[in-house]
Amino acid sequence: MLTRRAKSNSLLLILLAGAIGILSSTQTWLTVTRTDGGEPLDVAGNAALPVLAPLSLTALALAAALALVGPVMRRVFATIALAVGVLLGVMTIRILVQHPLDAVAPSLTKATGLAGDTALGAVVRAIAVGAWGWIALAAWILLVLGGALALVTAGRWKSGGRRYRTTATAPVDGPVDAVESWDDLSRGTDPTR
Image (cartoon, rainbow, N blue to C red; front, side):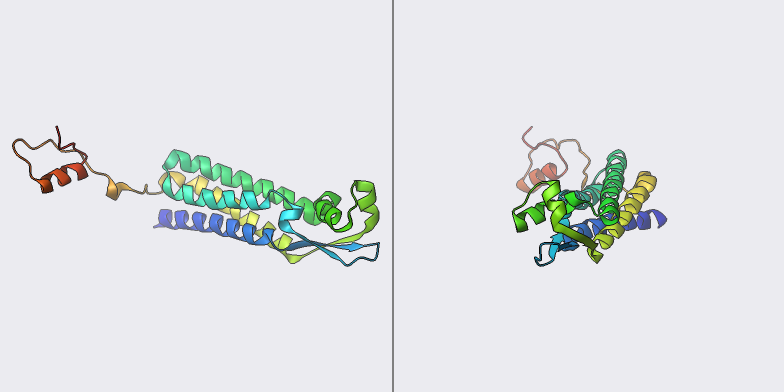
């Protein structure tokens, strides 16, 4: 019971983190107040952190893979989920705490036509952090927790697909009708031999 709960909890945490990551990639993370009198510029998560959507999709794929593979690959995929969560967490914290110019530069260049740190730095009065960056950071914490839980408990999960495995039986001597031929195929035996 505890093992099944650990499996479902870890998969749920990883799926939830991936889904929140995908959602947050389209939402406003940063708002740039400009010195040139232009309207404030909203910067979406995927513009501030270009690897956000691909790594969020990776988390979703890892959850699906974890549900299907054996114990060795579970540990590998759980480690990858853990690493992706830590990487996204570090990158998100950098954006939320430091408010780096490179996180808003592509959006600002598109809006103003200016390029280069000096020119863009002169246009930026302030960079404000929205709620979606913090929500994404919470998702990465969930991803790390889900990956760690999967890594610790992966060896005790039940393997899927046992009900679909068949055992080969010896071929029947003598004439075989069509129904028996299908049954032989289902058991993994070639009826033409």
